[in-house]
Image 1 (cartoon, rainbow, N blue to C red):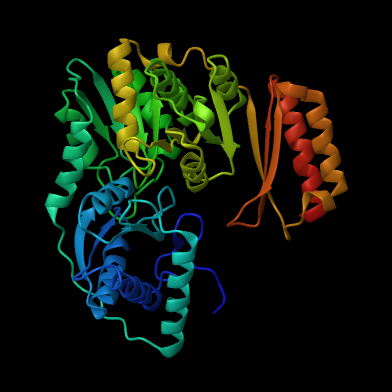
Image 2 (cartoon, rainbow, N blue to C red):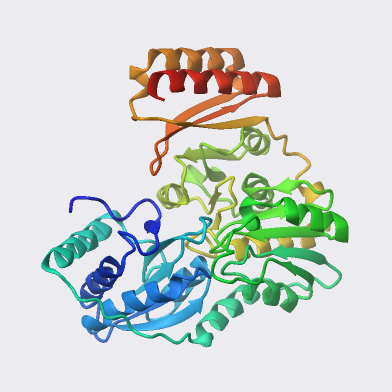
Length: 449
């Protein structure tokens, strides 16, 4: 029973299989209940889920485990991940539980746990919960799920907060909203309609199995086609739990997290609010963010700090350095003055606010971002070794780096969850980028494939 349960984004797996089988999920509820018992009298924990068909029974098992420890559960029903983080930190809940596998297909699910602060649990608390779970499983448990009824007041509380952050009217703005049949399917159209926009919804009819299926933030071509056909002012796509947002400009250009970081950083910098270490204006992003973002920020005197891939690492660096803005190319953007996690709906509101105040569309706002050609290649491997022990691979990496100089980047890393080596090459010339990416991937395949 020495396996880890928590990864960088909670517990993930196939619903019904370990570690998301009824026994383990019920044990998690018990362990969390035991921890909550020491946090105050009559503790209560809020639970939410996205639209996967497995969400309700997983929520029932968590609640059943909590009940065994005398801890009450309040059920938000279908809600976004950042919605649960907000509800946890602004109410008397000692913790929050979100049941979602974000952008994964419907067969997968996951469990994220937030402390009362609205941040994910620190590693030491996750480790304590793991040990409790393994102990319960070894001694044997009889899972007894609870039947839960959603409390609509919770979702409304979160929506009211989002509305309160947008002091303008979007009357006259037409926007296409792709919710990926996920957690924002009801909330997002209502939210944007509430601030005056003409909303054209798509993929807002979840059936438990169509979440992220050919739509949402990972599949934006249908949204792009709709924006162009409708001559809309913009489009926005969310993933399954709506913690990320990707936009479409009127021209059809895809506006990703890098572009949002740039336009948000410019606005915060102009207002004197873009804080960072030593008072230097700072944006935090990952190693995947495009070199074009780094150069566009540098031209305005803003430094870019890079972290490993994962919004968890972005947030840790923001808290360490005092930065207020960070995010990922994939659309997770953290506005730390407003939220403790990436929030796709909040990102959309901040982007709309910038458009409204500047009286510019997304094509105009992002015109200074020169995106360098970037090639990503995944190589399946039979083992993961240190790159220093793979001379043929390091030789190809050095050749690429010498050819690019300061005008390009090479990143090779192993996936933390799959038997894959991930190769990213970025530079000014597409043919050169493709060539070096292929050469490095071939060397890895020869050594480890």
